[in-house]
Image 1 (cartoon, rainbow, N blue to C red):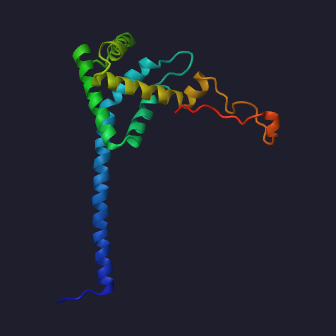
Image 2: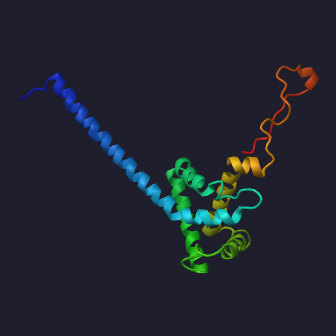
Image 3: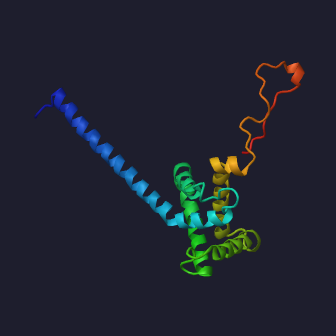
Length: 188
């Protein structure tokens, strides 16, 4: 029987450790690739809907604030695997509904066509069939668009009335003069 010396054992352990690490890195790369499929598959939908829901006016719109890119990053970084799978299923239903109602190339066309699509989605999602997966996919996408727009720098500072410090700051004020401490409402 051939006995291993300490140095040979450490070399062998290192090789086995690297093999395990490479397997984990390959799994992570495969996951990132499938996530990239998610992002690429729905990115056009994000762009069309973002532009129609919050268009450019006298303030920058959703596309100028890079809302579709922020949505993609948010979903891939924040949503868990199950939530991504559920959201993907809803987006597939939404995409199929759009294709059946507006044609295979529903995403190409002008603003007038896209405005009609969003109007039809609004009617369908809130009035006609609010419990369908199509409606759920549209509403979740719309919520993400609005959230990312108003939390972007341009959306928060140019569209909203931005006050970096709400109220005057007085560092050492006697509580008997103020009466109470201040709190702002939590949006979440």
